[in-house]
Length: 270
Ligand code: HPA
Image (tube, rainbow, N blue to C red; front, side, top):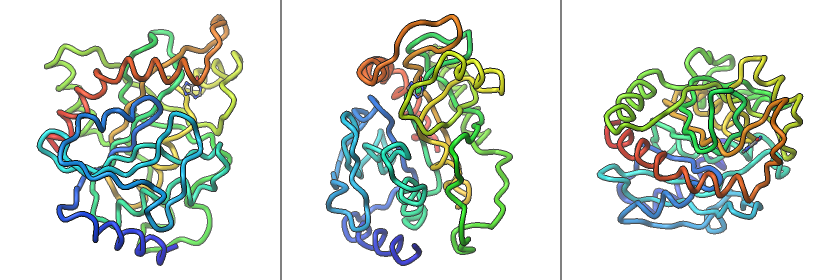
């Protein structure tokens, strides 16, 4: 694994002169954020050694180097989901590569279903914590001390400092933002009414099929993390609306400007 990470990082270093310190993983319906980047260099995953190729409709696979506002960033357009059949090491491989490139801050975004009764479709939720309900942990197996400790603390999965900064930005811009705990599950089924209820009772505010593995690996490597969910559908015992991938993507696209406003300014202040 160490050799593969190095190989991929070495290749990317040959492609980019000014290596960003911030990487952004773009979730479903949020990939167009890269339209707002300048000085772009687009590298399809298929050209990157050891990178898997994304299989889901609506998730294009490109690593995009460029500037968001004034800040150099790496944007990952299309992530690797556990439900696609990738193992956890593959799902989190790009985060290992970011670390090897010198990235210090990881921004993660996703589309998520809301269980919190205060939430509305289109809300932007700053992720304050997470619950790992995947059947495994990406750090299971041999630990490489070069990458991080055997037993990493997860006391502050999402940077309190970045959350506070994002709150200030939202207040300045008059944007309504929610806070909440993200529950990560395998999918690909959306939840039953009882499952949404269960996730709410155990402390979740929103649920999705990604993010948790990447955040675990980022924290293992001592990167700072900021996470944001776009609430694309609501779930619970009394909710009978049927979520679909198309609807989720559309709702995420609609909320994208709000998310972009916060992320762009936050990245500039990092
Ligand atoms: N459940 C799981 N994943 C999701 C959802 C949901 O309701 N919405 C968007 N991603």
